[in-house]
Structures are given as structure tokens and as C-alpha cells.
Length: 409
Image (cartoon, rainbow, N blue to C red; front, side):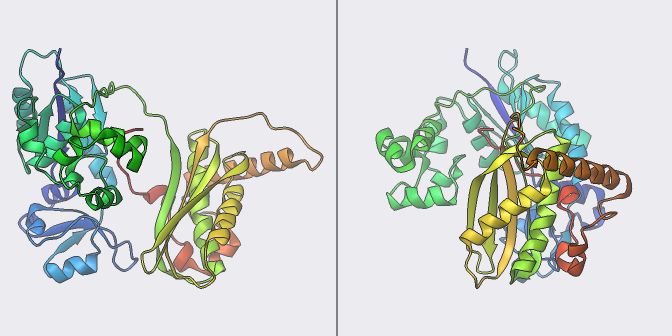
């Protein structure tokens, strides 16, 4: 039996919710974004009116204001967006028990076996979301997840696109290769270098050639373009295992010395360690991500000596990675830290009593966690962090941005 997959995408989700709650800005150009003063100044999403000015997601706010001087910038309200995401999901659950989120504002639904056709179900969902939640969705209907996602992006806003085995070549093949899920900026650049500019050209490329250029991802690209994706839509109760825990930040000013780096890394590592403990996880591989003021970036990772959820161990390894891979003359704009490779292993006692020391550190940090839960994040702070509140006065644990779930997660 041929599957019927829907991909539902809430149009301009954050901005749509903000305009719903604030009718005074509804007919004006609106963007949801961070603070330009604290340099978290990029557009997370914008409404349809702002889109007419050529604004793009990820664009710096100062640049967006040059294009649209009357732009209204609203700070993100994630608890509100989570509420609307859950309300939308409650609607989806009336049509299938196989619902797989792809971030807060997108979901796949498998409605195979329903007596009605996929387009009719999509139309009913579209109308219900508009009437019950006051926002609009675009829905792709297809026989696999990749083409359903393509369909929801193909026509916006408040639209339905059906892509089936009879018409997919006419709809998808002429589109630029970057419209296909899994084709990012670097992949597009490499494809274009070899003269591959459309989805159809990916589909008609030699699979062995793509594998020689992209490795196993080359075969994935070829299958996606040819409609051969057969990945299932997960059950609504299936919990996706956590693959990594991390935080990053764009700093209030450029980091120009080691003390600056230490100040920011401590905050990030303490947040990551706290989140690991909250999920009863310990990791052995640490990664750092660094971007300078010229927007050049690099990432590095290493295996630590033991599985850990202790902030000082994560911090020391993060600093070691940074010092090994950075130049002396630097101006750092953004930093990130993450821990992965989760497991647990029995620890071997030694004459240095390292296990006992680690156990004592973990008890101290667990006690600090309980204090912060009760009295707030800033109730207890390392003395060294008080030297520069401009750099240390952020809270990634409570304010981290919600990122989409990876397709292969």
C-alpha cells in the first residue's frame, strides 16, 4: 500500500503568534529576533509584510533595519510558542498517532489507511488550525517524508501542495538543488562546482560519482531526489534519544584575551553540565565551536578521560581545545560547547583518589543545582565571574534557543 504522508508547517510561526496576541502590530512589518544591543541581533522569523522588504532569516537586525526602517522587532517568547506548538499537535492527533516533530513549527503525519485522500485531510487540518488557533499552515502531501516536506515549502502561505508519483518530476526537478532537504550551503556550493544546480540534476547524476564526492551522504542525496526515501514517521509517543547537550552564545563584546574566553566558557560549561545532570547523562566527547569577528569559524572535539557531568572537567577540556587550536591574536565573537557520546562506565579507584575527588565535585554541583532551582540562576556565582558581569551575566541554561530536531536523529 502506498503511504500518505503530510508535512505541516506553521507559516512564519513566531511572528504569526506575536501578531495574534498584539493586533496593533498585525498590519506592520514584524520580525522576531534577539537584542541588537547584546549582539544577539538576528532575525529568527518575520511576518509576510516584512518578507516583502527582502528580509531573510538569520540576517543581522542592523542590516534588516536598513532595508525596512519601520521594522518592529519583538523579542522571542518561547513558552508561548511551545503552547501553540502543543495546541497544533493536539489537532494533528485527531488524524494520526504517527506524528513526528521537526522543530516547534513543523511535523510529519502518516495518514496511510485513512479512507479519505491525503488532500482532503490536509484541507481539514488547514482550516482547523486557522479557525482554532488563528494562525495558518502550509501542508505538503506525498508518498514519502522528503517530498511532503518539499511540498509544504513549495507554496506558502496557507496552501496545500500534492506531490505524487505522477507529478513529482514536473514539480521538483526544475527547482534549485538547495530546496531539497539535506542540501545546505556547503553542499550546494560543491554540487554547483560540478555543474549540478537542480534537484533533477541530482536525481540524474551517477550515484557512484555522488558517493565519491560526498561519501555515504551522496547516496542519501540521490535517494532523496529520486523519491526513494522510505523512512517511517515516528509514533507520537516515541521519545528521540538525546544525542548531545550544548549551549552557545554571541558575546556582548569581542573576546580579546584568555580571561575573556575563560569567563564565557565557564558560563557555558556550567549550563551544559547542569543540563546533563538534569537528564542523568554523562558524556565523554566534548566539542567547542568558535567564531571570530570576521565571521570565520572552526569546531574541534576530543575524548575526555572519563564520562562526566562535572562543569570544571568540561571547562578544562574546553580550554585545552581552544588553546591548541586558536591563534594568539584573536577577536572572538561567538563560542559554543557541547558534550556527546553518552554512556556510563565503572570507575577504577586509584592512589590519587581521583574517583573520590570527582564524586565530591559532583555532590557540590548537585547541591548548587538545587539552590539555583529554588532561588534562581544567579543566587550563587563563582567569585572570578564577578570581575566582568558584562561577559558573565547571561543565562544559557534558561534562555537557550530551541533548535529543530535533526532528520537523522
